[in-house]
Amino acid sequence: MGIYNPKSLKAEEFINDDEIRQTIAYAEANKHNIELINKIIEKARPKKTEKGCTCQGLSHREASVLLACDIPEMTKKIYEAAEEIKLSFYGNRIVIFAPLYLSNYCVNGCVYCPYHLKNKRIPRRKLTQEEVKAEVIALQDMGHKRLAIESGEDPVNNPIEYILDCIKTIYSVHHKNGDIRRVNVNIAATTVENYRKLKEAGIGTYILFQETYHKQSYERLHPTGPKHNYAYHTEAMDRAMDGGIDDVGLGVLFGLELYKYEFAGLIMHAEHLEAVHGVGPHTISVPRIKRADDIDPSAFDNGIDDETFAKIVACIRLAVPYTGMIISTRESEEMRSRLLRLGISQVSGGSRTSVGGYTEEKRPHDTEQFDVSDQRSLDEVVCWLMENGHIPSFCTACYREGRTGDRFMALCKNGQILNCCHPNALMTLSEYLEDYASEKTKKVGYSIINKELKRIPTDKVREIAVKNILDIKKSNRRDFRF
Image (cartoon, helix red, strand yellow):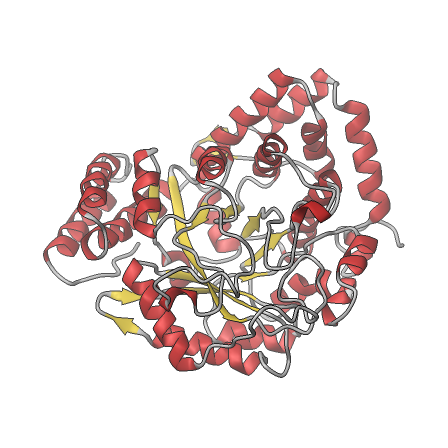
């Protein structure tokens, strides 16, 4: 099994089973140690400095102690600390994106995904480049600027060349005032050479869910196909970074394995990336298994309730304070509302999880990867966010200004969010309000913009943001950014 070593490039050493089990045992032994728990929470809290705020984060063992703690007043303190960290580094901004499914052809046998090879009930479909263009126009007509492309693993139907062609097509579509300014990619683990090609194609973040860090469970859940190789899959982020991609996104599918094991593995993976590459994950996603075509989530006996799920999100926020956190439309409006306060910084809106779904008038279900719990339109999601005090952000400036990887983390750690990300969010929200919003959303939006402009600390930045927003309202000029 090897010895635990976060700097190792071997999966079973940086995600070490013995270390995870010892961590869970340590957490169980200390879950009522109030002195230790208070000390860990205090360590995690933001500390004011001359430049703004700083956070130490937590080790996987410290964070696991908090997750194991079942003392109500301590849980309340954990939630308060998570909210404090979220507001300190991300403010009330919520980044908006949508998934775009390119193909559901897949050669893997993943038992929790309806795209698995043996499923003969689901119609197989792969978008042509003209269909990709039509989907992008439909997404632009909603107001989206940021996509996450999704595809099954199939070297014949979905080779890397197909993915690259789709990225090129997406970036080429300029419809009315619409542009997709950032394409994140969620495709199967691949080679350094292919990651280099993705980087050259101008992708944003490379996202790959581990599904489960428990090796034996991983191999059982992926009985056939290239995804069966646990080490190759788990070591993918190292290859991506070797290929020049410095923004990577982690995630597990909660419900496949015991959540305390997954939580420790997830934080250990983040620690590994920091130890080896000098920068942790750009994002962490927290999906829970959901019903799909021939998938019944009750067949998996590790499901987690809402309270446990909320605590997982809060403890991740304490452990990796500078990492973005993503929640999808797998979760309900009520659950998403709660998790936004505890650490989530990105949400999808108006999502369709089927191939070609955005050009269909009615939501198709026959090729969906999972049931969508939050089926509201993007405009409804944007309005809801603002009515709850959040700023919907369509900003992609950092990616296009080269502020990725450790450069983005430096921006976050130096407390410059209010002088950079905050005005960018307000300007891109103004674009959305002018080009796509309903009258109700527009009214709510400009009310919050006028209030939030006053929070920009630097006079010059505030003056420029005000001028740019006036230009957006009076003309077709778009894409202002700091």
